[in-house]
View 1 (cartoon, helix red, strand yellow):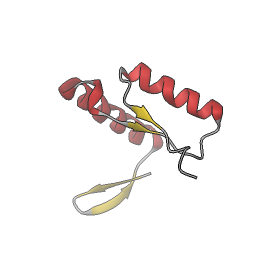
View 2 (cartoon, one colour):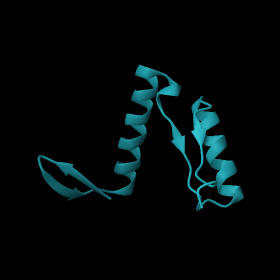
View 3 (tube, helix red, strand yellow):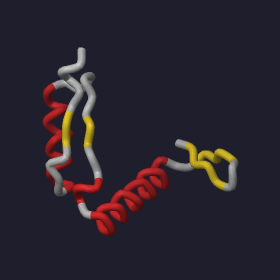
Length: 72
């Protein structure tokens, strides 16, 4: 993964990337509530992936989840 700092792209570790993204997501949820995020799945997901994606959205605390499987 890479991160843009001061207009320059720099390589960062996966741990740093995951931690920074997670922290920002939690900040959004804390400031704006869980419904501030809309989870949009892919038509490329198989049944198990779509199930886990939906469960993750529920764990996040929202029903704002959809998929694009109907667009073929």
